[in-house]
Length: 151
Image (cartoon, rainbow, N blue to C red; front, top):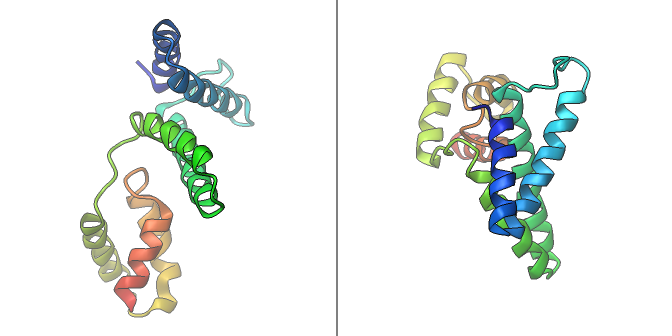
């Protein structure tokens, strides 16, 4: 079952269970998947590959994380809590994120392969790191760990 089909199935389950949080989140996901399916270059049958669906999930999760930060900074804890609930549902569909220790080890290997020696050469490391760690770690985490390694 593809991720797109899984979302549709889970929407029905959430409706039957009257689970408002899950239903709200999955409807937003379905909407984003429909938009992704209608973009230029998408297949004509409206089906998305799991890779494209996964990128959509990652994008939505990133938006929720940023919203949580903004709402928390502005004292809007009720809105931050709502975003946290939605993020927890989105994370069920995402692959498990790597720990900082695991990411650091992979980044050290990439730095050695590329031959980067200073923070000025992060531009050489970052594209390879993003490709290698796609779906396993977010760009913000990778960037912070790279700064830590070079300092």
